[in-house]
Length: 176
Image (cartoon, rainbow, N blue to C red; front, side, top):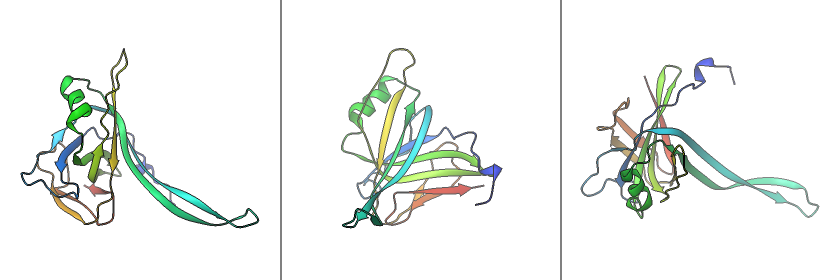
C-alpha cells in the first residue's frame, strides 16, 4: 500500500440522518422523509467478522473460516432534548431505517455512507454533567439491491442518489 497523506481524515462530517423504511429496505407505502438526528459528537463504523479456527487432533490450527459478520454504527449525540430521548426510548422500537452519514472529505472528495436497513437500539443513558446520549444502530444485510434512494432533504449531501448492492450491509460513495 502506498502512503497517501490525503487519505488521513482530520474532520468527520457532522451529518447523520434517518428515514423509516420497510424491513427489506424498500420505501414505506407513504414514503418517509429524511430526518436529521441533530448534533453528533462522534460516529464509529464497525464492520467485523469472527474467524473460527479449524483445529486437528494434534491441536494445530489447519484452517480458518469466516463466520458471523456484524456491522454497527455507534456514537454519541450531543443533544439531550426530550424529542431525541422520546425517539430513542420508544419511537424507534420495531422499525427499520436507512441511515445516511457524511464521513467527511478525504483526498478532496466527500465520503458518504448509506446503511440501507438498520435497527436502532432503544436506549437512553444520561449522566450528570455534560449530557451525551449514546446510540447504537445494527446494520442488517439486504437480500436485494437498495437502489436510487433520493437524498433530497439531506443538508450537505453531495450525491443525488445512493444505493447499496444486493447481499451487502452498506455502501460508501465518494463524490467530488
